[in-house]
Length: 313
Image 1 (cartoon, helix red, strand yellow):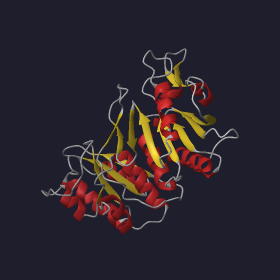
Image 2 (spheres, one colour; image 1 turned 45 degrees about the vertical axis):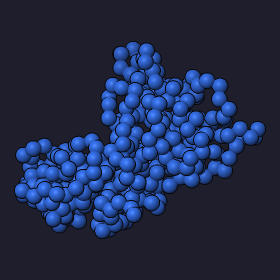
Image 3 (tube, rainbow, N blue to C red; image 1 turned 180 degrees about the horizontal axis):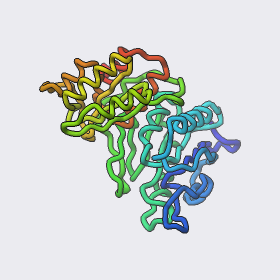
Image 4 (cartoon, rainbow, N blue to C red; image 1 turned 30 degrees about the vertical axis):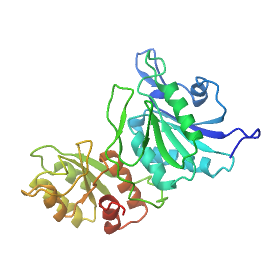
């Protein structure tokens, strides 16, 4: 897993994002730098870096097919016996989603480190080069699995979420529970429709029903508190269950474990009785990825519930 001169070889996959962005003539920042451009900003390091251009997108525009393409490229790099580890340059808006996809699909036995930036390459506070240097150092540390190096911190991917839009310390984890999915789910998520429906106090089931009508294979509810909604949503969950569409309940609250405790007609307890699955730890973006993966791999409702709700012993 080293280059010809025994120097460790890291594959660097460039996908766009703020780390690769500069302002154009219209004043808007968009991906403009290649992976090689970014590597040229690094200080001298005892490593061989092999860049590959995958995408040049803002991660807010990534489809499940795009995320799958990134995951596939990571898998190809991991399969190369010369490669010691992988660094993925990625936009922050969907960082936690793609990182979780890679972890669950590959369960890597080599280090895979995601990183990016909050400030564009031509911004006075540009944080991309520092984050990239940290990611390379973390990958050289050799710890297997997927991690995020960002803002001088290191995070596991299970429960990861973006917590700030204007700070170099952009990420946090929702909790410290280990992952409940401990084996790869390799089938591709491309082609699946899995929707996130945002809830609000007093809301009805209009958007849930619209997702069902649009052919969603699964639905994630970004609910209130510890995973609560309204009686109208409970009725919508029952309709989804009758249609064979799993509904996973998570929360707009960023941290803490979720529990189906409350009644009152629309609480988490009522939602679970109607057939909903509580995500326990994962927030909406990652819950969508896990649900899509389980559907793509043919998991039944009991397996999906176990993955989301049961903490490992």
